[in-house]
Length: 266
Image 1 (spheres, rainbow, N blue to C red):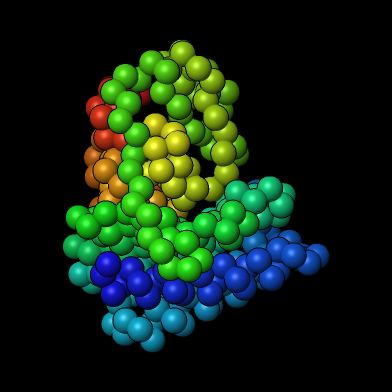
Image 2 (image 1 turned 30 degrees about the horizontal axis):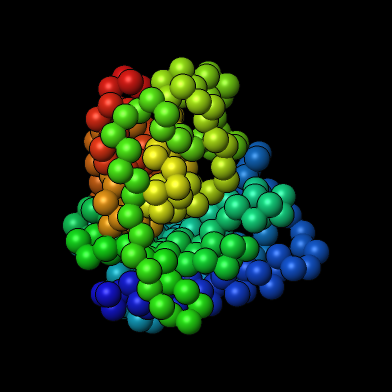
């Protein structure tokens, strides 16, 4: 496994321990904007991850959700950049339903290459290195390879959608397409994990689908596990174009279903 992935995993696990310390006790909730909560766990996890990555990889920008944008200004001009979501699924964290993750992704030359997603409440950790493979990593450090599903037909496929950002019309369209109800789930990263594990076939989010730090680790993990992640129209995400928002949706699949789902949503 690449050294970048090893370090990112170590850092994400450390941040996950911090996050669970906050989760285990009462905590206050602030709002950066309407329906956009933030807690001390987000802020402290963000600070820890950014400090550790900057120390281990000086010169590589760290684009992180809770950082001042000035801290990563000009990241698009760099050949590589880290994308960090200190808690992906803060609303789930606040709701205490366990569906949140610590995510660290690395993009090189505009493409996601390394993804680490740790699910603190699940006690599970996942690493993907594009071109090498994807694994679940146990607390002992043992690695078990993971892979996307082999389903080739959209009919009967399991579709994951956001619990918070999916209008009824999207869920209705998915049901008509797959012949079964869409499954709502928290955290973009954890939906990507379920696709990478082969436990779901598709994760779809039309319209605005979070930010680049929601996408990078997810992108790398799904691709490393044999799947595909793109914008909803099938275009690859470009992490060097200066955009921070995922304005054109996200689609993660096992790869075999990708073209069919893109065509259906068009």
